[in-house]
Length: 431
Image 1 (cartoon, rainbow, N blue to C red):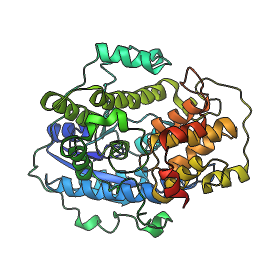
Image 2: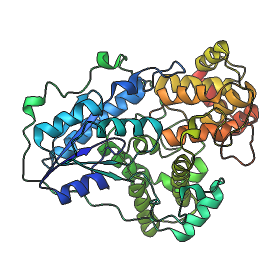
Image 3: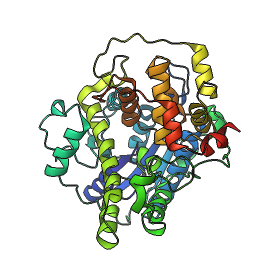
Image 4: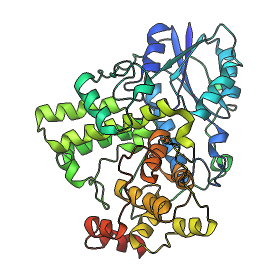
């Protein structure tokens, strides 16, 4: 039997359930990644779903995955087209008997699954794996996703007490059977910038980090942050920084497209705590991984409400939608220099600090009272570390329609005084 691993947001060899299971249960394995044109079209809010910064990070990641898989004699076929168009051709051409992929549950992803399944013959088996969590869904102390609590602290404490993190899944071995993919190389190829209707971005020298996609780069960042600089020893103290490479881990970029798994990070932190030191700062890295899990479980619980104007709380607020306010917010031309600096950073780099994200979102939704989904869609387009659950969940949280029990509003001037007391960050991006 020959299997196909359909890579989505699990673009790694390490700790990949779909890849290892396909390899273990079949005679030979090949992989596919589809650059779906729909992911580069404009959304209802007028932004390209995947902008240039996300696109280049993704292309680097897929190229790195292709290189990594070659060491196992596993070909990765890369195509520009929809999965429902490309994958059935591969299955027929190479007589593949099963598809293995990461489990997805949000609207667009499940619609693609349905369209693809409708074009498969009944002999092709379908296998999905929950493979993006720290705490596996089968292990959490909730028998139904509907039981997931509204408040993060309750979720965190119960999971920490009752749930163990699974060990990382081993890598496959080098397979002996070889697929000849030369004949399809013209039909299946990496997209060009013209295909994506995007411009290749240039690196801004002010960038907080020189991000480069791919599992190998993600693992190197993990090595550098935990072991070489040992910056993790001070993570909680520095995580709200604004300038430089070491104030935060930057792991979120690789976590977002699955070129690093949360379990890989978790067990590396555990090793550091055993061999070097264990403190509140090292724990806080795990704390943030649990936050990431929480938003995924909230998404599983509430489904499409993640994208509704009233949010998961079904709040009936009056939201505005001013094109002029949107233009000035995006340009970084508001009354707050701190907001302006952060908006200019994301526009120039595809990155913004966590502290910055909370402030610009609070300003947009709470002060200007603009439709929070416009902000979420803009972030979706630009952010290198865009994750559907974290992005839309966090925007709901800050906007008062999500999981914040206090429905707080940021005092932006005070935030700037606290986190940029010397004005260095504002000066860097507003100069």
